[in-house]
Image (cartoon, rainbow, N blue to C red; front, side, top):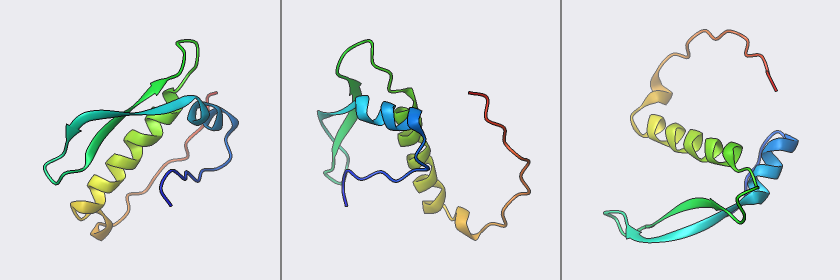
Length: 83
């Protein structure tokens, strides 16, 4: 469903998603989809994690479109949370 975001219930991400507002642009893609960006309702609200989520999702979609799902997964090291 459009507008739904599922994540690991991280409190900071939830706050940043609630702070983010969609702003439609007067520009469309070649296939007619309207472009949009995220904005803050007020300057003191943080939306960095929401923007990171959008960029990561787009990168995921681009990778899948270029066949990344056909590649062997690389060995990964454990990631540590610093915040």
